[in-house]
Image (cartoon, rainbow, N blue to C red; front, top):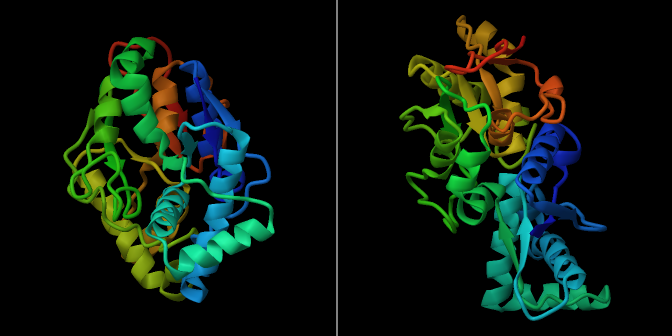
Length: 306
């Protein structure tokens, strides 16, 4: 089994460890990821505020390319790990399906480039695929080093299930908790799991640039609450959220006079650890902080990288 893979810009930069761990996990589970050739930015940064049709056209081109790479009558699943990219692709699907002026402009732009969107391509998040296609039973069977004793705060952020809840509940999602529980972890009860991290639409975006105080407060609140509830780590599904929560912990400690040292990794890194994958293959060497408790009943040293 293989899927079309749309990495998005962050996966080739600050979120590189996300891509590495995603590929490693899917490979270990016998599932291929075929990177879309000649993909472009999804347009989820500041473009929608400037020209909505052009923003839709950017994502529409990626969907059209995905369909062209897999000709036939059936659907084409496009895996988009970044929550911002995932939402942009979903928004584009709906804009084109609804018709109207935007759809007409986008269709004309695609035609001028020799492309056509048929409506077969559909955006999917890897969390959805792991839970609903590969399955939790398969995950549990493959977990050769279960994450026993690891208390994890599952963080969805504000873009993954809102406004388009295609595979989980928009107010109280549980997919990540179920996935990591199958890998042996202990997800904590965390009401803030869908609150904004302050990163706005993209890493280093409008909020962190124009409203640094507001950004730090939003991220600090998440980290402090997760730590207060006994979390050993925060699992994220988006490179933008991960960066915001990890990179500014030092600034938060100075600003609020309280350390909030907490490992913030991608859910694929934690899952890959349970699957027994090499830390370098999971991109752990790129993290600013990686410190997990020794899995209950497991042999070997603790997962530590300060």
